[in-house]
Image (cartoon, rainbow, N blue to C red; front, side, top):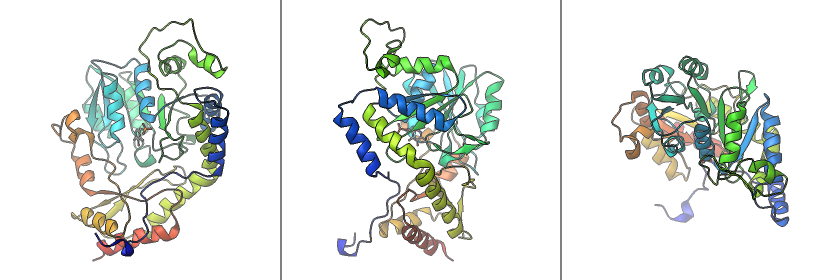
Length: 381
Ligand SMILES: *Cc1c(COP(=O)(O)O)cnc(C)c1O
């Protein structure tokens, strides 16, 4: 490593943007000592439902992973069941499935979107398959329509992992406004953050009610009590539950972030992605996803670098103190999920080529130019 005097300023891969409105909202909630699940969470759920549209119920929980797990369980998925999941996703998707006792079945992805390949998924349907979990990779919907068609015939549930896709529009409606059960994450680096947090969105009242109970240790109808500042003392429990509710403090942060999404976060993220597309045009050996930045709110900006040059680019960025990422190591290669016993050729090819470039609200144009200059220099001629 060079001495620190020569070190260029760090460019982060991703980060949250916390302003005075967030700090004020959190402080005010803490000052009131309104720490558990109560009115702030109720208000956040209402505002999310209004923002998403489509007459949906929104249930806020402690993390995006918890949202996925509770969504699966509320759909009756557990031991002995199989869930089809694209291998190219954060390990949270797989862990959420295995947490229910079900088996995540890794599927290959499409080369052009990184999203679940419906034909590969179709080949892996068995008598045990109960659900498909498409992932909105890099905020794109991929072949979502075909996934729903595939699920339709055998009557499979579709639980969308839309952790990357909050705030985006798909087919003229907000992500979450249509579809079966849609899960979002509000962790520290997502399109909006509540510190930690997640949400399930659905029009299915049975699923919604099960999740409301399950997030509070299975205590029946405890959500209504907590929203009116009360506790349940005489109650029944009829199913396994968890301590997965969201706290008011986190909801206060999430509400303040939601208010900044449309005018600040979404346009800036889309602008940076469009600018990457422009600045990286005609770079040999480099390709990026073809996404509609007029509709989506890009969470990450992965590029795919051929000719075995990915690691050289990664090293060159590191030497300039620029962070980059790998989204993701395919889950079927992880020991707990088979250790590479199945071969998923497209995902494995993408894995060898992928490199995620910095993208976040506070990334400046000058910083982006620095990133692009390094990539261009490495791949030129
Ligand atoms: C962030 C993320 C999750 C999990 O969300 P957490 O809030 O971190 O638990 C799940 N799936 C994908 C694709 C993610 O990026």
